[in-house]
Image 1 (cartoon, rainbow, N blue to C red):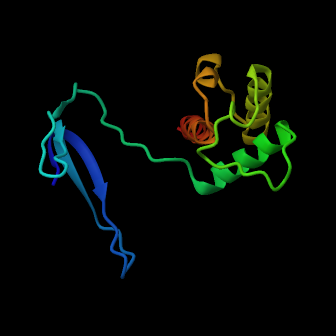
Image 2: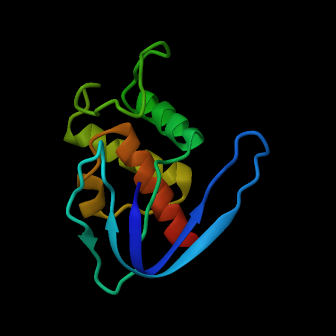
Image 3: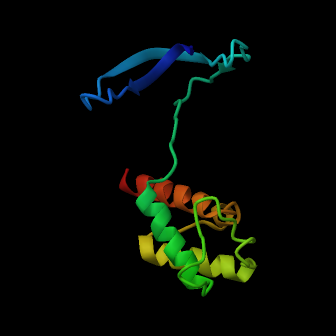
Length: 139
């Protein structure tokens, strides 16, 4: 069970049988508490800012990033590259990583700041950053 109190949060739940998505909104969100296995953790106290929960990138984005990484690193088509794949484990050095980021920028029509680029270690990191930048670009 989770308890939520304070400013504002929207929730959507899906019913598998009917695929309906009823939603509700809670206002005045100030703290969030998630007990796990009957053990409670200290509630997260939030400042009067936006509370934002983000999910992992779409599978299509991850797949496209995997293809670009394979191309930039000249990996064989049968090589296993997934969201969890670390660039370093795939044999990428810092120059390769820069080239991967440049390829992603070109493919997705985005611009990645140097600080953000340095935080990318896995394919999933890259895909999540791309979706975030695309979302911000559209806002």
